Length: 238
Length: 185
Image (cartoon, rainbow over the protein chains, first blue to last red):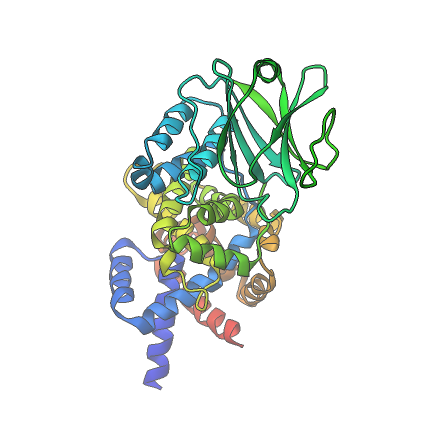
């Protein structure tokens, strides 16, 4: 009988703690007990598990794109600062930028910080004037692009969404008149810098958007994509 | 766009996050941040404050993901609990002045809202909880729901419903006991 009463009292207190309904002093005492009493902590955990189901009734609200940049900076900041200063470059670049750009930089910051990224990509140095985030039809980020019109350097940082696909991704520029221009094949997962020749550089300087088509290995399309276009994104002028 | 992820996939990504996998952490964020912002916003009522708390929440997740145990907790409820507790801490911290809603309005919002987590995992457990809450007196079930959704204490609940503090405590405590018994059936 006493055991049952004690168990009930513990369950009630655990529920009150999980619900956060206790006044501060009582909450602090119960929190202290949770730290030292495993059985009580288990009761609190079970209430948390049960009560959190109520959150199913709360409609989701999409955070602003810049929030991930703040979180990534806070979480990865120390380690990334040692990453040849490249992340610092991208983060400086993100300050004051648009939400789209911030999201691009966030994806890129994570990419360049991957320890396995070989060959070593050369991040553009200061002259980046045009950027884009290419997304799949379902909204998932596929590639982040940064272009330096002064040098013709095109920096591409793919996410892992194309990993394992036997086809070869090809990058296309979409011109203001709607025509397309092939830039070339790129590695599906590794960041890399491409140097555009004068003709391509001119098109890249005016393109309004970019797209990725997946082509069969060994095949190079010419006037237009022969494989499916899987990702695209608008170019933002900085 | 919210990435769709099953409970199992989310648990795996959280496990990888606990090992320092940054890409996995980003996938967890993409799959869950809208839901958790909804939770923070519901408690704090202010978008900027809610995003600040969401940032704290994910930094906590990054640091504590290694303590997540998939055999003991569902990944989404683990995340919701962290977000809700962070939001309540902020609500109660000095200087926080955020809007509060009358109880009746809160119920209306709750009742009209869609089942948002259906894409993350089965809503069976939520239905079971709601079924058990419905077995309680309306005023008791309502008080428990308000405490969850708005992070208010006994004091504020008793003032809002205009009943003595002791009465509110007695309602909630009896309600929690009945709820536990019902959930264990």
